[in-house]
Image (tube, rainbow, N blue to C red; front, side):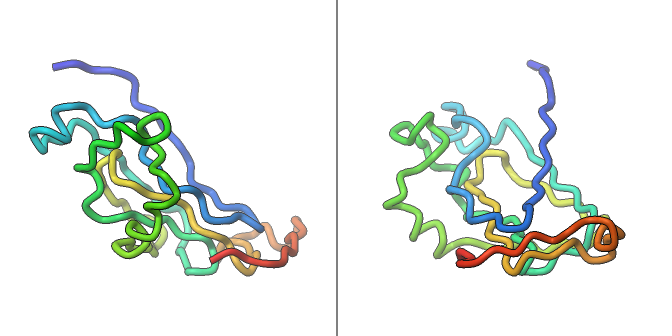
Length: 138
């Protein structure tokens, strides 16, 4: 069994964040798209209660099996296919302390933060200015 480094990332939409492009975390290995065998997992841990205005995480259900060989870097599908991913998308609205697990190959994106706001229960409001933006993308 091969072992390796476990990358860690943080999904933090800031005020004015727009929809990210649909993407996966790395190219799909042959064993996944041919044999339907998963070789990786991604864990999402939530530090605050999430509401739709905060730009929640969104996944396109079932896309972990797509080969993606013709995509940009084998991770970013062409924009012409985004509507089909939006049609099967599920927004995740976890609460503080929730943990979710998915295939790192599932297409996903961060969504627009609109209107700008601090996370619920955040103590930053009194010490940080919230930036106002216009033309929120949905």
